[in-house]
Length: 350
Image (cartoon, rainbow, N blue to C red; front, side):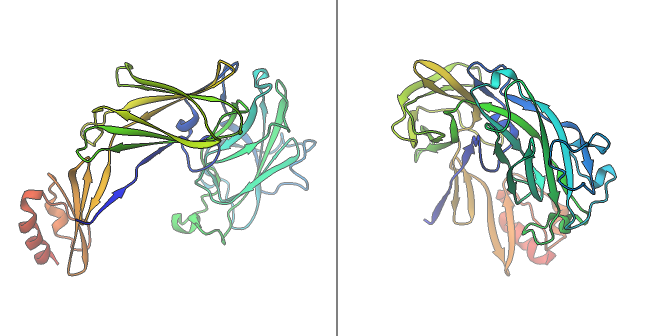
């Protein structure tokens, strides 16, 4: 039987990649009260920024107010293609960020953007709906204020060209902006895979990681059930800067759409006997397999795909939508026990 496993990963990307702010929201850093500070709010905005607008001595207090996050066009600023505009704001670096790696996290800036902090260029970025991080450790000082400048251009040569689909200029800072503190040794990448056995009973929890530094550290992993009861705990020395830890889990409660059972994985870093970093992540034990024209979740059919006269048809179990049968070029929802009758209806409706 031609089966193709669909890998399901739950990512906890701390520095790079597509991510939601929830990914690094539930973190603890030893000696830091608030490792995440949200910078959302009212910033200053100029559609025609002055020369050297990124420098700290530029008077930007007379610029227009704009809400971050939010689209410029929806706030009355008629931005144009290929014309740069600028944001500026001031933020306070907490005193207990001293000695930590300090980052700026942008969760969505459309589309081409450049970032300066205290007049120093940090980095640029293409692509408006992916997270990006800026390491500003050597630019800011703990306990002091800093000035952040972001220049954005809605470029027509951008490969996504989202404004063309939206039929209006969607440029701006569209998602959260955060100031974050992490210990010098942290997870550059951390993701989890739940691999079920052939009977979909027992599981293997695979924890893949990449550390920020190649230095000695212990990794501790705890798995809690929905009632916060301890399922397992493991602690081992990281053998390299990147690797994978596999943990057998006996008959966990499985996740599916009707039974969204979740567990909590708490992953910690231990240096010199002290826990320096901890991150919590919810996961579900499930496995998705494509078996020819059927999509299986934990071995059970979720839906199947067929072709009739070259037309793609999606069958979803235990669902019925008669109206969809009247529109031959759209999705059809047919109960599994009536699939043959459904195909007849499809032929008639087409």
